[in-house]
Length: 146
Image 1 (cartoon, helix red, strand yellow):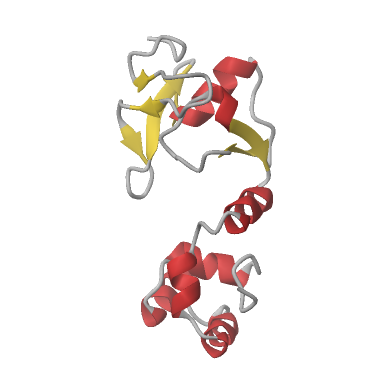
Image 2: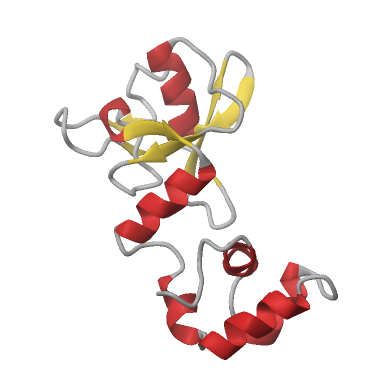
């Protein structure tokens, strides 16, 4: 099977999402799982490499303009840094919205003050949010300026 052979995804119109129907990966199974040249990869990353015939540069992610993690339509994929991806996500009102609504400015300051003393996972458990949300807060991507 090659990625261009749509046996593991539903190929639709050129501007529609092409949804991965094969195996899944990710913390919650939100991404398609594929392989390219014998390497296991998330399906959207494999599609990028297969389409562009070049590796993904270090420090870059394959991002979705459609914000659909199961989409493998090359027209919906773009390269960006993690920060660019998170800014795109935030600009569209996606990402850690629930956690941002849950936390007060004082709680965000407290999370930042605990960073050296506790693990991100422990901090997340204390505040009832996810570890990635704590990571975003500590990196300044999710902050009190919501």
